[in-house]
Every structure is written in C-alpha cells, then in structure tokens.
Image 1 (tube, rainbow, N blue to C red):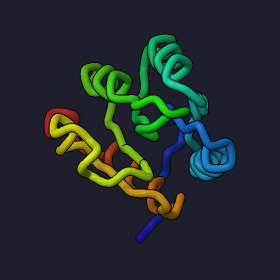
Image 2 (image 1 turned 180 degrees about the horizontal axis):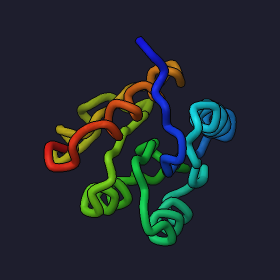
Image 3 (image 1 turned 90 degrees about the vertical axis):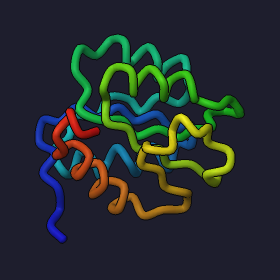
Image 4 (image 1 turned 120 degrees about the vertical axis):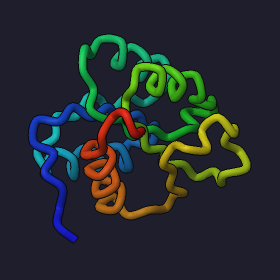
Length: 128
C-alpha cells in the first residue's frame, strides 16, 4: 500500500497524551500535511477548529483529560470535516450518532491512522 501524499492538507489533531500527539504530528508532517494543533483539550480543539477557515480532516481522541469530546466531534461533522476517532474506548462508549465515523481503538499504529486519513481526504465529500 502506498503512503498517502498529504502535501498541504490541513489536519486538526486533538489528543491529550503528548507522546501520542507528537507522534501523530511528526508522521503527518512527514507526509506533507500542515498540522493544526495538536490541541490537548476540548476547549483548545474547538478554538483551533473555529480559527481555521479550511480543514481537510481531523484526528480526535474522544476522551480528553477525562472529558468526552462528543460536542467537538459533532461540530467537526457539522462543518463537513472528515473525522477519524482514535480512542482507548470501545464502540459501546461512542454514541450511535457516530456509527458512520471512522474509529480506531488504541493502541493503533500511527502509520495506519495516517493511511486512513489519506483515504478519508481522498473521498468525494458528497459521499461522506
């Protein structure tokens, strides 16, 4: 499988664990992406999303410092931003309204997440 070319793609990263967030950032930048963030909490994630006129995708941990980021996920979806949820929680914790959102349970290889983001970005927005 070829590595995705994310050159110039603006990707919001919202992750509260520094080491994981930095690994996401580094891998995305290696593929040419412009990383927005990483944001360590919901407030900063929401502010970064609102400050960006265009986001090509978002990578979101659903539990940020003990707070569930469902409102942020809703806001990203409402804005039409392709979303990938990476969380230590299994599907039972995620509300049904996110059943169509691409989701990975941690631990997961960063390269796999980046590959999936490339696929999400490449889709026709009308089909998301």
